[in-house]
Length: 188
Image 1 (tube, rainbow, N blue to C red):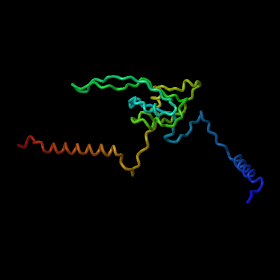
Image 2 (image 1 turned 180 degrees about the vertical axis):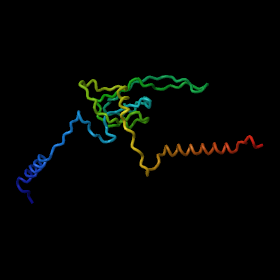
Image 3 (image 1 turned 135 degrees about the horizontal axis):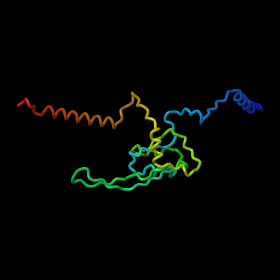
Image 4 (image 1 turned 90 degrees about the horizontal axis):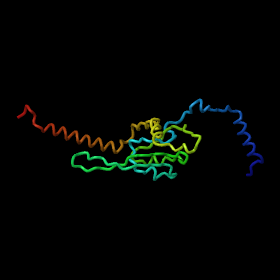
């Protein structure tokens, strides 16, 4: 069955007329802040204390927009007779947001939870060279990261917490048993 000539044109005009009669909704952005959904993606924030300079984020970044510099530092032994340890110290952590495509791979691969999504989105610059943000700016965005959503009450307990609880219960039971078997001052 062939369509009636001009049927598509009539449908298009009907959509146009319907749209023209509706009231437009314009948000005055700079004056009124937009209502963002919770956990929306804005920029990447750095929790510097958790960063071990493992370089996974920089290696996995498809745009190569993460720049990390570090040096090794020796740490004195924790106990006498122990040996000195070396650890990486973060000197520079920068993200070039003019190259970043906001894929989130760096956040997903970080094994130490040093990178997070921040809902901040107002970081425009007049010069593209100023879109490379150093660790000080990335640290400032850390305070805008929302808390993670609460766990589902019906969800299974995470394996890590279950293992830690089991270990703590075993230690507590061992301590109670040790206290019960110790001779008391009044007994003898």
